[in-house]
Amino acid sequence: MTHTLMSVRWGLVASIFFLLNGCFRVILPTFPHTITLTSSATEKGMKLHFYPQDQNVVSDVVSGLRQAAQRAQLWGPLQVQTHIKVFPNHQSLEEATARPYRWLRAWAMYDRIYLQSPRTWRYHYYQAPLQTILTHELTHVVMYQLCCTKSAWHKRHLPLWFREGMATVTAQERQYNWPWKKMRRYLRTSHGKKLMARPSAYLRYQQPLVYALGHWMFAVLVEKWKVKGVRKLLTLMRQGRSFAESFKQVTGLSQNAFKKFFIERSKSTRAPHIRTILRALQTHSPVK
Image 1 (tube, helix red, strand yellow):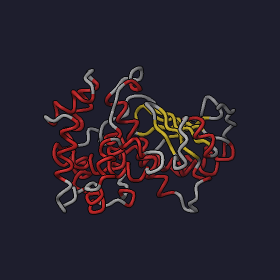
Image 2 (cartoon, one colour):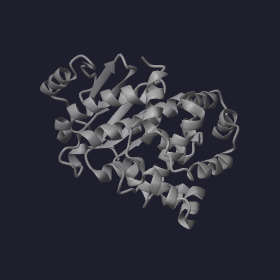
Image 3 (tube, rainbow, N blue to C red):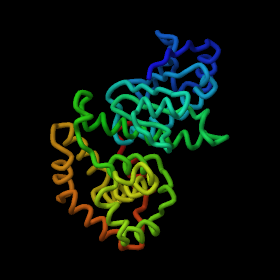
Image 4 (tube, rainbow, N blue to C red):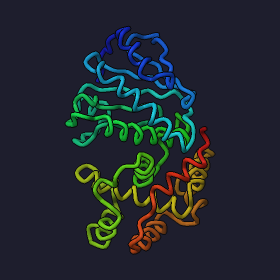
């Protein structure tokens, strides 16, 4: 779906510049429908594209991107410029992503994030959910850029649990109302076994459950093999190895063996400590 993006008013650009207070420098766009953002935390910069009816939410998106970039790049720096496109309604987002998910609010690719305008969300105060979503999606972008080249990223397989787990943990999401205690009980049921076998089958109608499983599986992965293990996995993929090969080299386990390891770990009432993971991530961040 194509639309013509309209011009940015000079007053809007000035207000965004004032809001950012030096954290981002707004470069006047070559094309009137684009704002280019740069900061010390994003050397490659970002470009924000939007429609005229969303001028009033641009400053919130920019502010959210500033914070999201800082957190997502704790895994590593963005390698190429990233484009964020704000779609004016849910239908246009579904058409752009070719994904008919009613719960969809954003979608990330190698160097792009498609975002449904927060103007159309159900929340009156959307800043906190917006911050979470932008961090989640920008973590996907960082992951793709660290493990793959632009020409090959869409051909490389990364398991659903790993992709969404890395994003939800980094964004500090609240496990989608699936805390550890509830998840470990569910995994002992027949439905839990089916979920472990094929989580993608549940994605369209039970997205919170699928994302929560990824959250806890990724947390267990980092708990055992640390932040440096995940970074090494992504580096090995960048060097040409598959996810399965990289995962085996880092953990010593096949993916099926890791699932069994996770099931055993889920028998413990002690949940993986997410804050400990985030502190370790920040302490050993390659981006300062």
